[in-house]
Image (cartoon, rainbow, N blue to C red; front, side):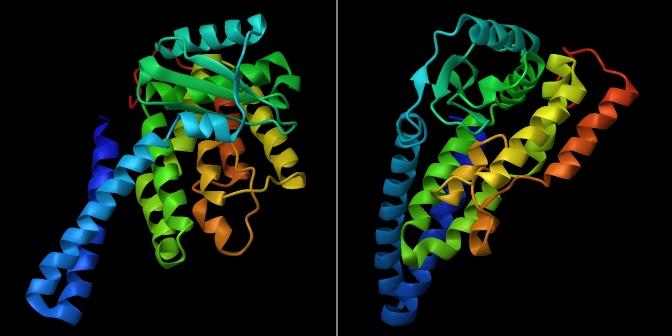
Length: 266
């Protein structure tokens, strides 16, 4: 299992077991601390297990993803996968008019890319950059930690008592840096920085006008946040500001493109 996933679930288990120990000690003393901590430990293990089970196939079902037989799209995915040096992932289409995408998978060999019908209406180079962005997440093995973190924090958010912890844990697991990196390295794979900037701008503009309904925790899967950022819901999104993402990518168009096969982290 991915070390980031183990670390995240381990931290979750430790925090809630410690909270159980504190509650038990305050009301029942030392013996109570041991008993309540043990109960909390078992509950968190169940939540950990459920979050792993609910991290992939249930997400595909949630968004009614259907495997694509579009030859042109599959060819683009194959090309970007080659540039990212990862096996070609499965390709799914989401029946949504808004342009957006996300990726899932336990590892590089079991990954999948999901792209909306709305994104397929964009020009070829913009589609290439959307796919290239997702290829970085697969190459950097972000997909597993993203999907597990989203599944776990969505369960926390659905429980009123635990809801305050949902924001803490989603931000503990995911950083906005991963989106900057996906834009940057995705542009290396596509060699088209201005088209990456154009894709991000178009997707964000449509998202602002046509916000999706649903749990804002799932915003962290998508290339751009498609949910409303009102009140506390905005705290669940770890996406950096669109303008900053666009400016960073556009600057690459003026600085000259490095070789696409440079190693991540160079």
